[in-house]
Length: 114
Length: 113
Image (cartoon, rainbow over all chains, first blue to last red; front, side, top):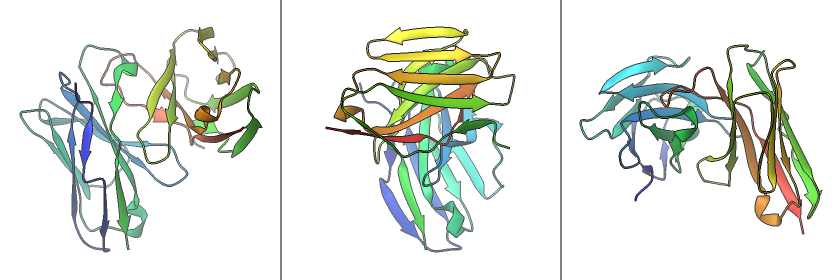
């Protein structure tokens, strides 16, 4: 049973560019949450997708957007990249109706903005 | 002020020692508490989950919650070099699987052989 997978593993972008990160949830899960983890910090909630809609959003600007596909996989898009967007981006999947602690994290995508 | 405060360390202890990791929080809505372990360049993995005030034990790990003081702890007994990692506390207001988590900064722990 594959866990949560994310791609790419890491990438380097230039300020002002746009980036798309991808997440495939654990088999059987229907909800995907995205977190940003800056160096030396804990993960911060960006937003969550369920039934192909954004259900919750953290304190992140509109430059951060997402999408969920019918197969429950998800994308995180960041426009007009800033140096401060450099971080590890984590995807967590869960199943509606299960418990909070039953969220599983992927290995993350490390984004470096130069 | 952050909703969850955690000493970032780093913390270094000799093998076999008891490790104490702590978090405080300010949001009274938090009712569910988790501890995650994160190895370098990996995603967080769940270690412990607690709800009520008191202690919960799982092998060498004990999670403690004091809701009246808004203080949670994780104790690691007989620490091993393989316990070297960053430990993150996380909290949520509800127990539903789609509830967002609020994390502490994480404490970087090194167990010295």
